[in-house]
Length: 318
Image 1 (tube, rainbow, N blue to C red):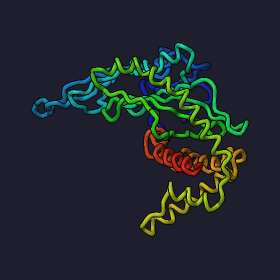
Image 2 (cartoon, rainbow, N blue to C red):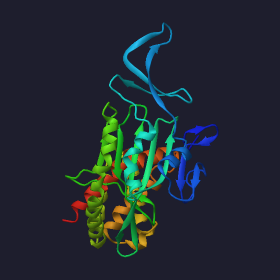
Image 3 (cartoon, rainbow, N blue to C red):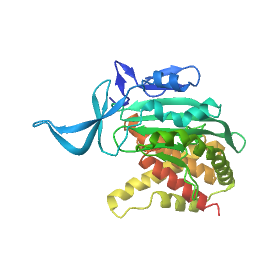
Image 4 (cartoon, helix red, strand yellow):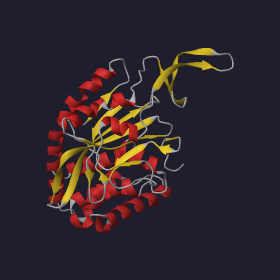
């Protein structure tokens, strides 16, 4: 199953607002949903319980090890320790409920991957960043929760450039950009307080706007572009890998000239940065499944590359 969405009784565990994504699967809503509507539409209302882990042959319990089990399907989602506390999907939404209820955000998309071991929620904030008059970056907050013990609940800023749908991962030194909520006994209280921490988002997006506009005004020469790419994708030691890095550099240069939205930023540092993000989001894992691409661009190596690209671009503004 290339999409790797959780499928329960023939229904994909995903909801979305707007254009149909990923193999036309999921439940489309005409307008951004409430928390309860989102959970229902995305099939996220399941319960996860922590059950003792046992050796089947002799039915012997494994000390301090437990399985996280989805109770509606009895699928084992992961193996965790004794201190791990499950956070149900409905409770994970608490981080956004206050923002949505007060009109500061709208639920945009949500879903589950695999057997439900990872869920995500994307909420859209009002207003946007305007770069060079008609180049728009919309403001989103991404929440992800895992039921396999791999991560805590994370909420982070997720700017998205509208023209090419590039996700512009954030890396601001000295600033809190993510809320990490551990799976502990205090998790519910921390979730309830998360929206207060997210009040920082407006201030952080103001800072991002200044950087983006500065990048759009910074012209970049061929030499500077090469230096920029070498910092993000350095030349490897082994000869066999050198040709691959050269291909990456050439593709990014091509995207800076003819990529989606290139006409809005050609010849600038903003254009170079967005060529990198377009490559990461739309070309780097093109032959992989959609879920692998999503995981990479939001949580994995793709995000790390884009954060590095952002940091290097900011360094070139000085």
